[in-house]
Image (cartoon, rainbow, N blue to C red):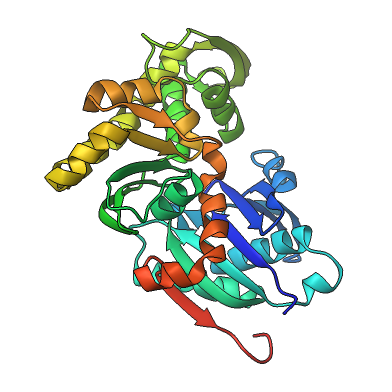
Length: 346
């Protein structure tokens, strides 16, 4: 009776939590810091991310999600429990809530079951799953129930989901194990190879966010000074990286995403393909903010490409909206699974 409707975007890089009537109340990195000697959890989210690459030997920083699914079940459970504790207070913390979590469209049954079990372990009364592209489309404000094709491309930290949606269901989809994390890894490798400089994840992400582009001819050329360890001398060194350097570094990963969009379009029924030409491609997720990406997708597919409003929040907003009209989504088969939990907390 007193439980809340909570929507969770359980992302590889970031967790977002949506609460009915409050909106998105939490956006923090999917990172947990733990003392190896005592097993004590030291920090989660923003505080834990600050420790990445700077921790002594007894402290380990764990990213419990990989490629959009749970890689470390125990740490995921701990992280979710602490995040939910952050956004609730008083009696809310002992109430059992109704929770909906998104999963990549390519997640296996075992991976989906793990997500459901994690939701129940942190105190959910009912746990539901929804596929990421469907949730992103709902959060972007698309009318998914109408008989018209919508092409949604959700670029997250661990995966990119490409899907054609019509009549409340996914007609064609593909889940790619490429996302913001792969961009960061590619930048680290490029800087190592071209400049003989070792940099960390946080510096790589900063490069991507501040000067990153995938279409140098369109986006403004920017530069940034970065610091790291010289691989030859072993001493700290500073170099200047440009937007063109970042574009070269992530070119292969961007190419995988473009090819994925092409494959989905090739499998799309002709009538829905005609709708997509009229309505365009919608980009969501943090990767949608990469400069030049809409223009590049437009050039490669010859279909107008747009970035959704608040692309990073679309999936979380979609989970919340789906909970508000749960019965309708159950009838259409959009909700993939549900478990009701009664009695004592497991």
